[in-house]
Length: 248
Image (cartoon, rainbow, N blue to C red; front, side, top):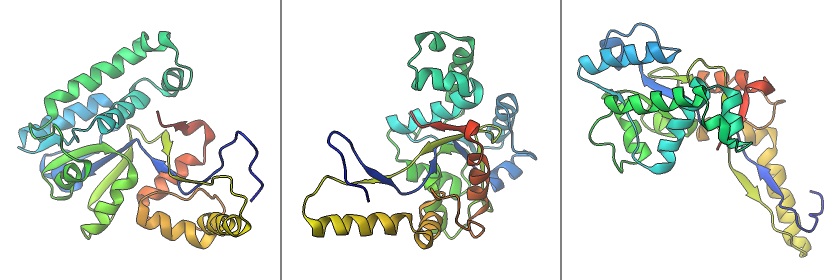
């Protein structure tokens, strides 16, 4: 590992997480008469009307501020588009917030209120996702870290619980975790830092870790064929740099 320079922060990325996933109960959609997973917002609300009429919760939302932001980002990237998303979060462009594209996203986000259950305020994300796993709710917009809950329930991502990058699968909002390395003069500590960094990015670490964590590897030269179909969809989108945007 290169010697850290003064005034710089060095971190080793562990994985790529996607924040803009729509997870859905295949059973709830089928029993509600939804035969195709919607890939635009008009079809989405038409499908949620069917779910609501069938007596299920259409949209499961966790009542925590950061998770509500995740839902809004899902709407924004898919309804307003990549350019508007980047203009707002990267460029801090006030005019982008005044644009018709942003207004459309805000209207869709507001419309979602009609499809929530009364128990959502303050509810944790994992208790919310349990509504999907137990076929009480149709969809939840949340990152792919929920795969841990799917595996713990004895289910398989993409099988019992469907997945789709919101809304048409064309964009990937990237987030992830890192290990930050402080500047240390002790050679023994430096050696430990080197070992940890090499272990994190090693090919034999990346795939098994991603399989359990729900993420996709940071490396593009590893065999990811053993990962679930949701991960495969994410990897395919990530292969296009124009499809990637950072989380807000």
